[in-house]
Image (cartoon, rainbow, N blue to C red; front, side):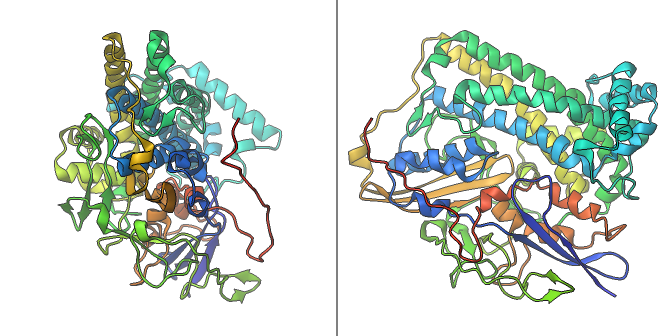
Length: 573
């Protein structure tokens, strides 16, 4: 007899996400539905605004990836105005975005995803000295030295955990599915991972400081404007650039000495799930491309992450004109897929379906999510770190090929393991190491350029001449995947604005052909050990690093007003 599982909300993510899964008599998932229960309306707020102000508002789409929404919005306007920014501005934007990546990926693995692999309670049974040997073992696999190789430190962490348990409270580790049979790490491996988890809480501040050095603040940086950046004084002061580099060195050492070894450890212990493709999903991947390496204008530059689409294992060039959004199963009004330039955001909430034993289930035959369904060239695709690595690898990118090849060789695993929940998690770590390495080069490039006397940070343009009627788009790889902002300008004001974000691509419901989104497809075939403890569902969904706030904002479904805000943008100070 089939069972209907509801996980609502999915925790340890940004925003509200509901997953409904149907499992058969063997506890294998045979159908799945992904639903966001919040509404996004930022696009409507931006209409009628001065396009130069869009970035400051668009960054409020999310409280995590503020800087990347900020930059994409600014770049969409720059693209519309055909403005090319100076070299210093390009490097600074890369460094701000790079710091966001490092911060986001490390926080994701340890604080949002690790507890899907790590059983905290088993760490209480570990021998701290044996934990040292585990740390050394996996650091050796990664070709580095362990971040912690001190039995006293492991013992200290273990004692802290014991005090939590003795006092009857696990604090941040409460309400986990501890003891679930699908946890596979040894007690010592669990202790190593928990130790790194707690240390990452402190170290994440370094990455936040890196974003603030050139961004002015974190979150919601303020230094990016149409035409360049405003952090002139930071570029004039060699000490500011040196501080960024020092913080990067420390964080990079943690990535190589803790994060990567832990990924090798988890990847090996859960290797059977990687080999059988658990969580693979669509196996179609797309990347807009990211991090410009040259100063020759929009979308002409060489990119660190190449753009492209891999469908059925074959590479195709990416074309933004083939991006569309469908609302057949989303709570919006619309009759056909639309390109973002023509996109609409008109709510049409139809509610849930029938109630069974007091539980309201989604109306999966109708509309069941606030997230639209993006399609590329009439295909459903996955975006994110795995997509970036797959696109780069299949395209033959030398740098990505080297880092992916090194990881697979060190782990003694075939390339097919990437197409899984384990592989998706590993891909994030692979690109984190690669990015941390090249960021060291970018810091030196910036220091050398400013030392040579180039302090230019902004390209002048005549707004009155270029802003009357135009359209543009800002495309980039955000930490979670392909992020695009599209803007249409008429008479110097925003006529239409659409943002298609990574979690829109991945968390979307069925489309007009009833094809699944990436989350939904990734759950099919997954075996659940204990239906009342859906650890496996959390593990696969968390591997995408969901950020539903990017896709939606709250709306009261009963029509009650939640508040009114009036902003006077024309007043002078």
